[in-house]
Image 1 (cartoon, rainbow, N blue to C red):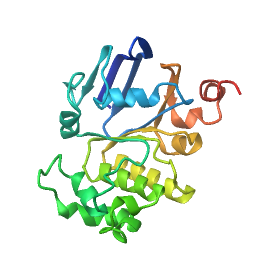
Image 2: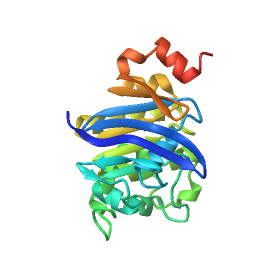
Image 3: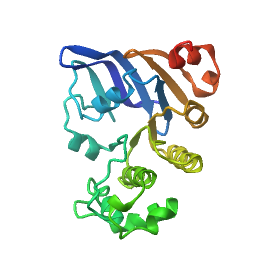
Image 4: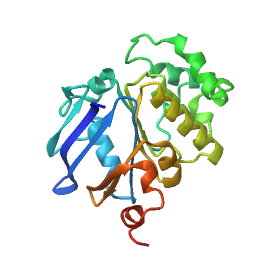
Length: 237
């Protein structure tokens, strides 16, 4: 499979402190890839750099064959790369339905209501609250809304950063199952997740990250319970 996303020798710094040191990774069309590592390993920073949310000190990022290293977040989203940020990032004063419609703006500047029923079918709890402001949702429901907002944008690559935050186990499984079905339909998935077993159960491939570097890459099914995972993710604990 040819890469849809190619990250080569990425360096990212906050001020003078470099936190990502020469990271390289790739995700193919329809591939489900997970990026694992301990807290502070540089995973979210890597995702933010890919999405154009923070600057880069060095390296290149290509998406769909085009160099997006210096592209704006808006242009990156329009190209089909969508990130669901960690931490229930939704528009709290707006209704659930308006939040979903915002997710369609990249492809339809006035919104596309035809996509709403599909989202309500995937996440019935949103249908029940469609006219409620997002501020009235629980933290878990807000995270579901954020994921749905990413899916409704019809991305070529969907990046999920810690989607399990604040969710019950059954809801987490449902979100990851939805992501897996999207990958089977040709949407590439790049997942950062602290629930290691669940991430590996759904992913095709895995990258392990430690102290700002990729320390291992392999098939997800081969890494579950391995010494490499134990060392890189748990730090030998």
